[in-house]
Figure 1 (cartoon, protein in one colour):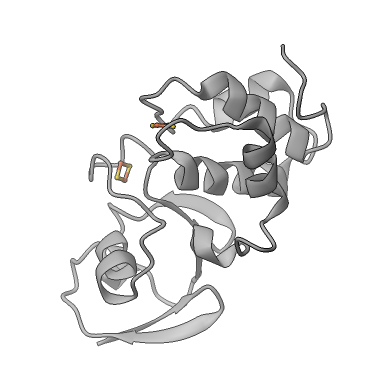
Figure 2 (cartoon, helix red, strand yellow; figure 1 turned 90 degrees about the horizontal axis):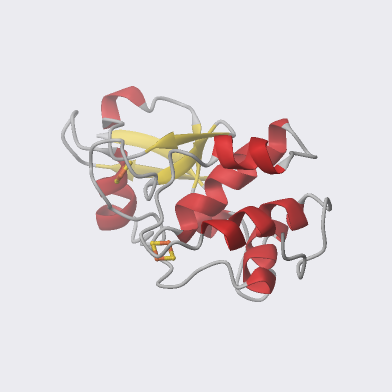
Length: 157
Ligand code: FES
Ligand code: FES
């Protein structure tokens, strides 16, 4: 039995030591916003904030979570009151299928916590581990820079 903190709430979870945090989030806690992509730390679909830093939840076994605070995309805001980064993604229409989007948003929130005025190159470098099969990268970069206030949402370069 583990007790983990997710989105500010403590959850008791009965699971194996090596169960990935991703499975617990999705299957035990019903937080489906965190996505399974590769399961190998290669695509970024499963990113969550761990004490504020983006980490892969697919390769994080439950035994390693400890008392660290986990934040999933559900913990960032609500449909009625989206997080500013989520709102910037909406404004920039920075998705096609949306499968990568929660990981992208988590990665961007982690970046902006450390660098509130990233250049385009810095955004690209920070999100380099997030894959988007739809090729929405340019709009995603634009959304992140708009969230930082560096450009307006309609900027097209
Ligand atoms: S599912 Fe975790 S990095 Fe791809
Ligand atoms: S919007 Fe489809 S994978 Fe990124």
